[in-house]
Length: 264
Image (cartoon, rainbow, N blue to C red; front, side, top):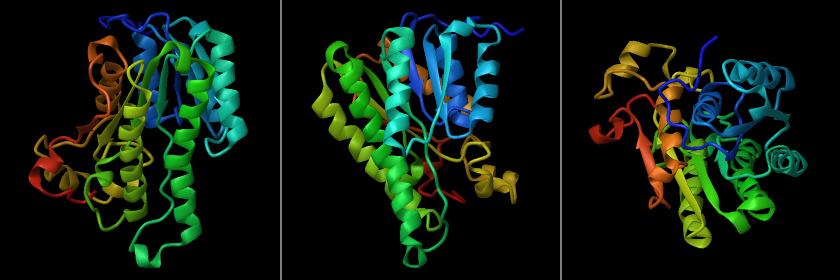
């Protein structure tokens, strides 16, 4: 059994975190990072079986009582409320919120985009994130404070030509992050992280055709891993980042420094 707390600071002990879209990929890695740093963690996702398996994996090497799985669609107001309420009921607080859930069901030129798909992207990637913030604020953070991290994307900072609707939604999430940081300070910090292509099932279509060629465009000569993003999130929700709010931190292997998003 692997000890997830080995060589990791326990700087989040006593705090409860809610991580959305956490059954796999970046969300799962973030949940594992926060758990390893001492937090209690609630994970959410649409598919109950995958979520249960993820919770069981997270509990290995840690106190199972610090892991809670609440299945539900982030786009559902009822599911969001259940996740927030059960977190506070189980752990006594909700000091950390990570809005990781994101979808991208459409590719190609925006002039040809299915508008129903575009609406769904914005509802899930932006409106649902705000919904979680509102509920977390009412349930605990408004009185006690906390830290929020929204998962944006480099596609929200620069045009890609192929995932325009997704990129526009992430640009909106970045603006939402800044607005919330101003409105909710000083007791609640709100930041975003903007990954480039990370090796997950979600991003497979962006690199699977020729991973070596895609990676070659990055100064770091590799694609990102979920752990690259998770470690940054762990820092941003910790007291080590106590004077950082309203920021969107790129974790992109240097791709934006080249002036291009390559195949992203």
